[in-house]
Every structure is written in structure tokens, then in C-alpha cells.
Image 1: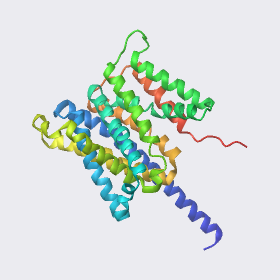
Image 2 (image 1 turned 30 degrees about the horizontal axis):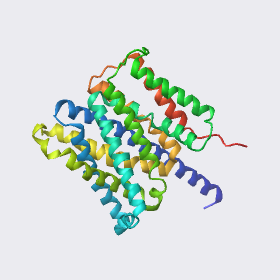
Image 3 (image 1 turned 60 degrees about the vertical axis):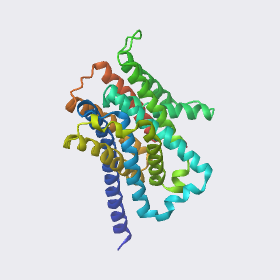
Image 4 (image 1 turned 120 degrees about the horizontal axis):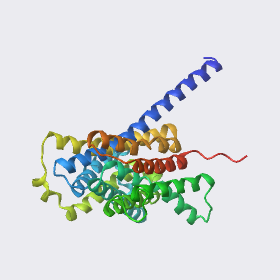
Length: 314
């Protein structure tokens, strides 16, 4: 094979990898958005509660992710338990990051709708940007300031519809939505290099399983089973939230990150709030006002700006 042919073949393979990575990342974001809507349907019509769904989701998804990790790493999935400091970080990551994020998010969905809860949670990247700027004593750049203004303005529009004297959403939804964003900050920052040391599936799997087990005596999911309407629709909703909304979404997104990089992947994953909003309108018949949509645009635009690759200095 000549050098030119080799370069053409390599270019075709790169294009295929890029297309595949893009498709997987979008699929991951779509599945995340889908999970919120199906969760809301189960709350509205099947008697499922947010604590029950989160508790069951964390345990089952944790077992599935650890099983997948075991197929690759075997006994390596137990390495983290030999380091007490890393175990402590993993527990903080699981309890505050994963369980905190999931519980507040689905309680916000239960109180309002998947679109609003998802968009409020998407203020997390802006919170991370501000936190890192304060920590590093670094003045945010122009794009970061624009993103901050857009995110703040979008949140204000969602909360007040432009009338600063009263809220247009319930205080519960607003507090829970922003709390899920704060928990997402923990989810992103607490693990640090542990993902590289032990593997992403191991960290997320243990974090989900341990936090799910920890929630069990508090939630007591077995006491809620009688109130749930157990039909095929309910089972399908729970399966979508656990399998598509957790395992498949996470797997697709992480593979997308591997193929196209974190910046592009996080940019494409912004399809999640768009999916949650569109499906809330189509399936749950949620009506959003012009102010709501303007707020959505502001927050999503902020995330997109922060996801764009920075220009290299000459």
C-alpha cells in the first residue's frame, strides 16, 4: 500500500470514528432526556415515587455497570477498597454526587416536568466554571462571562417570567433543580483522577451501588410497592429509566468521549434538555411559555459556549 493510499484509508477511518462517536454521544444525551420523561410518566400515572425510582435505579444500574467492569477487569474492580482515602472519596462521590444528583433531579421532575428539571440541572457547568475561577484566582474569559450572564438570565426567566416580584415555578422545583446542579458539580469534581486509576465503570458502578444500598433503609422501597400500578407500561418506564437512561446512556456517552473527545461530547450531549423538553410537550402535553423557552435557550447556549474548544494562543 502506497503512502497516499494509506493516508486516504486513515482519513476514511477517522471520519467513520468521528461519525460513530457523534452518533453515540447524541444517543447518550437522548437516552438521558428520555429517562426524565418516562420517569415523569411513571410518577403521574403509575403511582411510582421519585425516592423509590432512584433507590431501585441506583442498585440495579450499579450491579449492571460493575458486572460489565468485571468482564473486563476481573478482580481489579475490588482494588479501590484497598485504599481508605480513595474509598472515602468514592463514598462522597456516590452519596452526594450520584445519589444527591439523582434524587433532587427526579424529585424536581415529580414536582414539575422533565424539561424544566433538566434545564435547571444544566446550570452545573456554569457553577463549575465559577468555582474553578474562584479557586484558581483567575478572572473568567469573555466567553465564560457571556455564559455566566446567559445562564443567570435564563434561570431568572424560568423562575420569574420577567416579573421579579413573584415566582412562576414552585419554590420546590427551583430549589430541587438547582440542588441537582450543585450535586452535579460534586459528581464532576470529586472523583478527580480516580476514574483514570480504577476505570470509569468501576467508580460509577460502586458509587451507584453503595449509595443505592445506603438509601434503602431510608426510602424503604418495599413499603411503596402496593401503591404502584404494576402493568407492562410501568415496567417499561422503569426499564427505560434504568437500562436506557442509566446504563446505555452512560455507555454511549463514554464511548463518544473516547472517540471524539470530551469537549465535542459535552457539546453534543446538550441534546438532553432539548429531548426532555420536546418529549414533555409531545407525550406529557406540557405547555411552555415564551419566557420558559427563552430561559431554556439562555441556559443551553451557556453550556454550548463553555463546551466550545478554546483558541490556542500563538
